[in-house]
Length: 122
Image 1 (cartoon, rainbow, N blue to C red):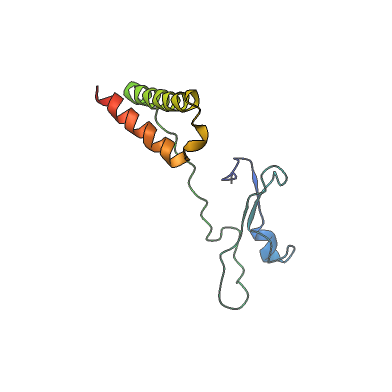
Image 2 (cartoon, one colour):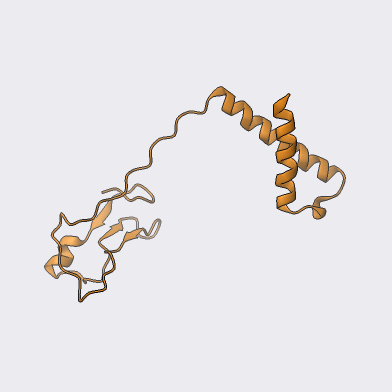
């Protein structure tokens, strides 16, 4: 199984836990890159007595790998460029007028959205 966080190999501890050679409180899965990543998958919490032992093919189903995103269309690229150009224009105007401290982030978002919408209509 590949680590869902970094893609490296993982340790499958379920068989060792079932055999008693590893603490039952240990995670079922752990990334082999303990220092760089540190991802672990703990067994599901139970409200009953100690958890029953499961074989190495237990009920855990790893999450699906993220699907690759399709390439943006040329229209999407133009829209993104127009948005960031609008954002840069708002910041330049505020900086030019020395009004940097007068605007909160939500104000900048509103100004950028207004400019972007008006520019995208024309």
